[in-house]
Length: 277
Image 1 (cartoon, rainbow, N blue to C red):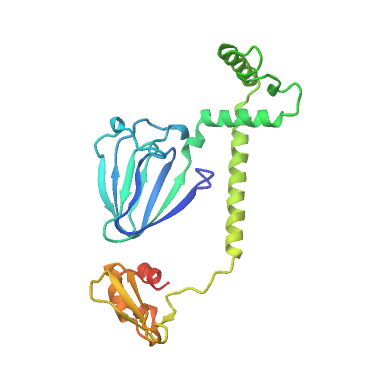
Image 2 (cartoon, rainbow, N blue to C red):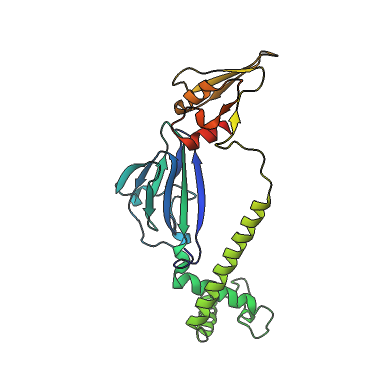
């Protein structure tokens, strides 16, 4: 990532059963999805516009217009260890079935690598840097409400402002400014990561832990059930907890005697830790 893309970032999605993880939309970036746990159904459709910019994304705030939605290009279920690549601009959506899902997206912000985007950012950076210079580009009034400024006059002033700026622009300065912005972004993420690592985490269940039910608490769970009932002997209170069917054998095995986490029956090691936590 450091060699080819300068900056990437990841997001983790934990989705409950029977949920639409993401409604139909597209992105201004390329993404790789890594399925870690559970399963998720994906539908990939057309790209209404190839390589869209941020302001051209669809489905973020309002549904994608029906006339822009094509027939599915691909429909499939992601399982653990599967990897999916979605190119920038392609419409996609996902949903879970009877089990939860955990996946990670690795995002490459490719719209930031476009000359148009970088020229706009460089232009704004130059304006901000010269804000206090009386001879700067900001000396020109660019408000349609200013005296004598019609829409035509405003457009002419803006064109002159950009033409004047473009005469001194150099490719190397745009590239250097881009690299500096990416470096600041990476440094900020590294600082945040460092601060998070300094936070003392509360006790948590690990594979080498031993677990048991609290004294005076019992659990009832039928085979292949979607509910577990915990009862407290001291006051007779009951707590009905929804569970996934795959977790039922493990919950049925819990007693007041300490048991090794790895000895509890569960087909998925990650699910075992999540449920016990």
